[in-house]
Length: 187
Image 1 (tube, rainbow, N blue to C red):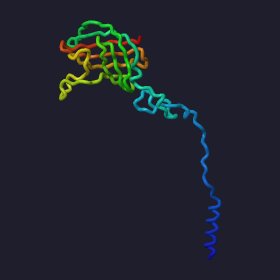
Image 2 (image 1 turned 120 degrees about the horizontal axis):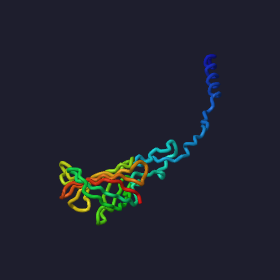
Image 3 (image 1 turned 180 degrees about the horizontal axis):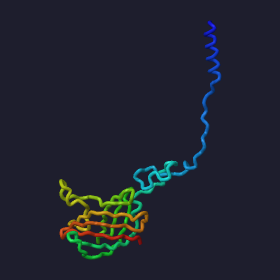
Image 4 (image 1 turned 30 degrees about the vertical axis):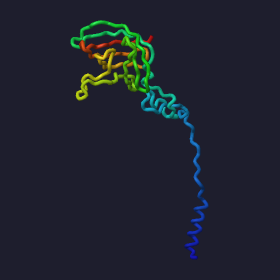
């Protein structure tokens, strides 16, 4: 063996002997990681308290904000001239039907409910369940108390308080179009 080969062999052995296996050391613990957060994008509190540990048992959903018994004074207006027609007192019952959908009963003398879908910001629109003209989507909405009545509109929470809802509805009927507005107050 040449001296050059021996020198290379000694250097290689020396380098290999001087290397030791890398060992990861535990870093500092972050106290924020002990918090649980909701990891469901449909939830109102999606990613609140992030970073942390994902735990969907802490989630709450838009429909959860629409539940309970509410008093509602309905101010009814003629849609053609915005003329006041009458005021009607209702006791409304709100109940969730899933993560984003909820039902409202109490408008009709029968036990029929009207249905709404809410977003993460508690803004909700009436569901469309019927269309009289599928091509133009005219007459779209949902049946309201009678087969001749179709309802469209919205129910929105006022801020983060679940004690008040703004209600704004439009009812198309065989007798004309009426607007229904007011604030529902939790009882």
